Amino acid sequence: MSDFKKRRHAREWAVQILFQIDMNRPSELDPILAAFWCQLVARTQEEQADADRAGTAPEPLPAEAALNAVAPEKLRQFTERLVRGVTTNRESIDEKLSFYTQNWPLHRMGAVDRNVLRLAIYEMFFGGEVPAVVCINEAVDLAKFFSSSESGRFVNGILDRAAKDAPRVIRK
Image 1 (cartoon, helix red, strand yellow):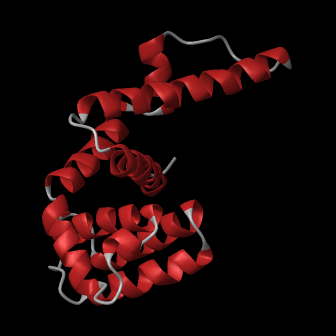
Image 2 (cartoon, one colour):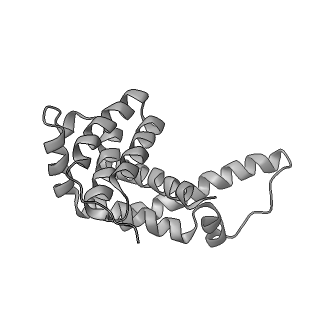
């Protein structure tokens, strides 16, 4: 799997975690992250059990190996860096979003769209690694995947405005 596709998975996971955080407002982040990874492994093991009943499953893996098979450590670290970055900078991110969505308050926005936008704004303004055009493309795809095609257009419009103010990323 290419690094691009791996990072796409990490962003998908980050949006799911950010959505959960947005809905539940936990006091601590680490238990949420641990629970997410456990659920991801459990879901994979359930799929494996279904395949086993059909006689097509490989041997089950020990817990740590199962986690690394589903979500390699490097991807988990990237996912968690995104989630921690968004949660740490959430107030600044929300201020930026409020500026770019002048007539559309954040609380009226769908939770999926709001968290996709938060992730993209984090990567554009705070992450320093990803060019704005890539952030926009990833966010539009995430919005379409988790929400709707209309969400893709909505996210694209907001991030296009934000990209004009985003710092340029210089590739080394």
